[in-house]
Length: 279
Ligand code: DGL
Image 1 (cartoon, rainbow, N blue to C red):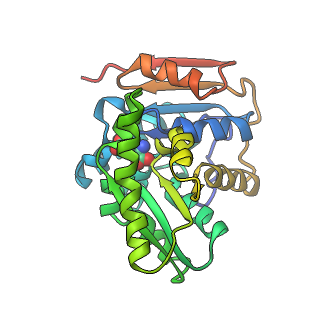
Image 2 (image 1 turned 90 degrees about the vertical axis):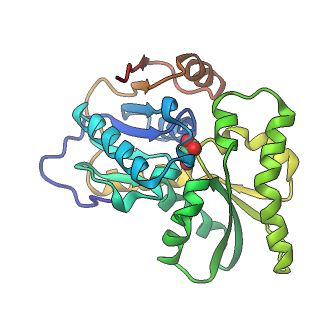
């Protein structure tokens, strides 16, 4: 998390910004809507430029900083970086409002499961290359290690709503099998798998069917816990009407967003959706 301290001019009543490269961040948005129903949310899904996991760091930093300042100009009071790929670069980002990292939350969730040994981690290629999870974990303990595997394609397959189960399962296998093998080579059976990309919890039913022996760790709950703790500590909850509204901005794929809002059962009581036209 950056900008931890509360400053005097922070407004309790702006929406909470949520950033992802596509519909993956809905897994975080849903947890936020469920647990903090009196807040307002402004979601930014950058589908036009996904997959982020295949982009270079300088491009990702530029995209993230542009989206952060766009959301700030729309009055957000805090920003949740739901995207793991962007969170792996959080130290390079600039924000005027408190900025929460899904990776920090994912590490805390990991430590709730295990205080020593190995944990599997699937994420985008960029998150793995940047060692986002490893760097955060090293701040807390040397006794737990991730066996990480990056995937080039799984997030995009999920974002596009790939209905061919065979293709989905093949992509999941390509990501998970190397982790289990590396564990076996070390003489250890991996018991937990951290879903280090917001898109992956969307297919957790399939992952569970394929690997019933694995405990799946989803950082979303930890992220809501962090936000809740921060709002409690700094008296930062929304105090005004309207409350419980959600506005979803996307840079492409309006239809996919609309379908996923229904499939993931997001709260639609007061929901607005806008496709932005980028020049
Ligand atoms: N959903 C994003 C993440 O959590 C990235 C997926 C992508 O655009 O590659 O890392």
